[in-house]
View 1 (spheres, rainbow, N blue to C red):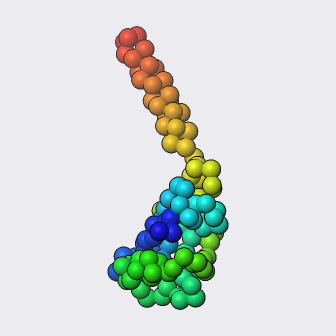
View 2 (cartoon, rainbow, N blue to C red; view 1 turned 90 degrees about the vertical axis):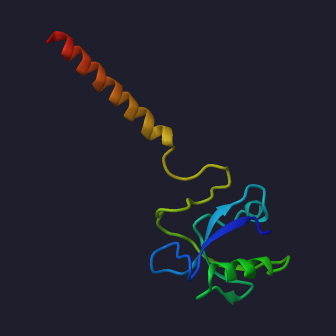
View 3 (spheres, rainbow, N blue to C red; view 1 turned 180 degrees about the vertical axis):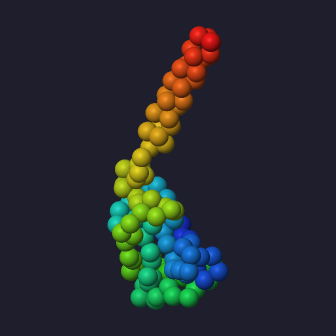
Length: 124
């Protein structure tokens, strides 16, 4: 295959009121990953010159499967991150904050609050 997964279509809208086709995942070591230009979250406008307008998801998948060896994609980059796939950076890291950067301070704050509460109860 081409080394990526897609979401969207007239029957499976990824973004409300938008039946476009989007890259949901770049498979590590696949053709798209090795090429490096396609990113998760990109909107695919055309495959080999054929526009992807008003297609059901399965029809879009079939278009990619029958695209042949030399594939030309017309894409539109996602300018603002939205809920959904994050941009592919090529180093295996996704964008945004790591989960630990949110959880560790939150857990430390919760533990400190519990300690303060227990000390306050002992004094009463």
